[in-house]
Length: 153
Picture 1: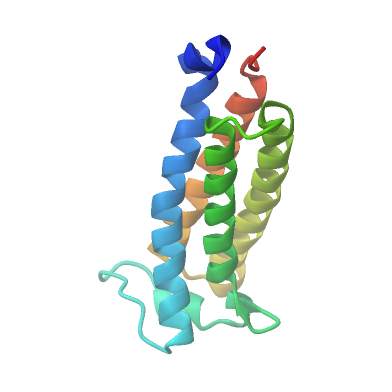
Picture 2 (picture 1 turned 90 degrees about the vertical axis):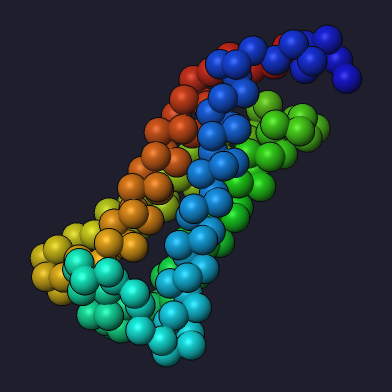
């Protein structure tokens, strides 16, 4: 272990650690929504929103692939990327920030589109989807923080 890695500053580590942990609820929500879609099970909505309408709409899958599965894969990938950065993978200090930022921008743009569809096309809101979108926006903010943080020497 190098001296600089052993004495990592919190400013460098914090966004990556938060990003790795943010993947857990993202994977959980994505997994639940994917399961309910593929198993043709009703999505528990807790009496708020119209989860079933959103989950069974024509916008809930792309070429037969549930968009929830895409979200699950996004959070799994961004978490693994954060862990690679935290563990000091070769060159990760240089390549992880732009890769994570690019992924987060694409994911945020996609959830913004899906939120638009929810609100203005379907006129229905799924609390699970709103939570997922919020986590995605937080992931974007964390990647901006990570990109702006000083890198290891």
